[in-house]
Length: 395
Image 1 (cartoon, one colour):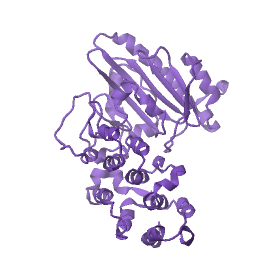
Image 2 (tube, helix red, strand yellow):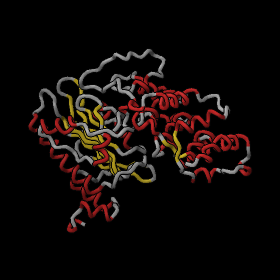
Image 3 (cartoon, one colour):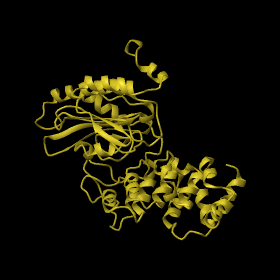
Image 4 (cartoon, one colour):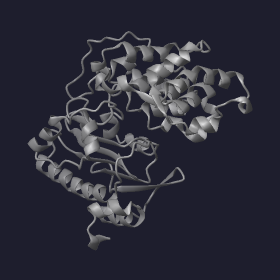
């Protein structure tokens, strides 16, 4: 972005605040089309220089964290760049005027951070409480419009849920014990910002080692998932910290997967007691979301039988994913199809279909062959992509 336009940002802000739309040099349509990017830190400094905002304390704390901290501990956060036109619409114009633009689903984490700061919508805040970026979730924690349920989840009121990042939890009234520890199978609770899913990290070697050591099939992992995957505890690998593994185990994540969500990948082992445990696979890519689980690891379970069941399911899911998933998408969106399977909670695999934001369970689908056939007929893929995975005799 040119320095001259950067220096005009304070004037643009004052025009938005003081002038009628017809007298502005940068009307809404112009700003929405302006996608030139600027450093989030520089943008907030320009906003601060106007002295027109008296409620930006916490947002400026984010600026200070990014600009003053050791960049080695922040990684990609230190290079947060945002489209300034969208940022001005979110922060200055006000979100109520732009509901159709769905800025809370913006692919840029910096824009979603500004939404989390400025929105009054409890529904949007609840959705952003699952965001991949710890900075965004921290803004949700600070927003006075967040619901008690959302805050309870982030702060750790529930036994099996709390945000794993110290930066997020520090904004709650209860005193934070930074020396707290968790059970070996639970979520890692003291992560620093450098470990946020925004940062590009190497694939966790223990991910493959675990499944190889147990002679278990691993669901296909695309290169962009491999790049983003993190270890959130013992037997818990994912591209984002939420939903928590216990939400997967209890199938509570099904409702989450019906919302507008980012691409994601999670493999974990969860349960309770001595015999109630499962391997859980959650994925969203292209038009498809999946939550599948197989009982595994319980004291009284037949390990060979359960491992065979897991391998069988993964082979089917691999077939489905390789033939029905588009390339990486940074878009946060509702998927068209949702597959849900549990060998101990459900009698048969479920296929859900979404149209106009309404989900319907296809009750006439009863087995995997029917799911594969249905997706083959109804999931439109880019022809060039399809050629990469589907042999000609299958077209």
